[in-house]
Length: 212
Image 1: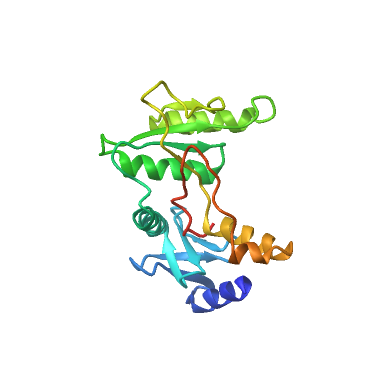
Image 2: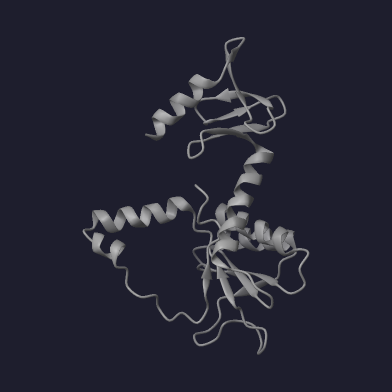
């Protein structure tokens, strides 16, 4: 189905001098379409990405706007932010978690009633590169780093505990979990899921409606 969607997208792109041209569905910017990378690049290395879920071509600026709008809508609908929150973004060093940290930094930059921290996770021996990358991302954004708290604690000194954990789960991650449950013969868990565990810290997933 995904391959068919990309074939349809390529067919919609006009051809100029033998090159397929993709046009941003919002601003109308034209870009050379690259079939192999499923994106288009012009001389300035700007890109137009085809989004199968919406059937639109998006330039870099409007792709970011679309992701941010979806994430903000999820936060509003689930009431994931409130005054006094201290949100710790789980940062293993991958691109998705770095994007989530950047998004939340922009979203909370003008709010003094919400604190943001980066929770570094991973094996200090096996995951040295990932931890170093996570620290660089956090430091570049001016977000304080913290380590995984000991059992029974939620991090930080008394009165400064983490109130929310932010994970970079996307729509594809959720779909993958559903498919695994179905193929494993646990379809009944999708209809009657077990009750949520008694986690001391609520978990939020602002990218839950964003395709990978």
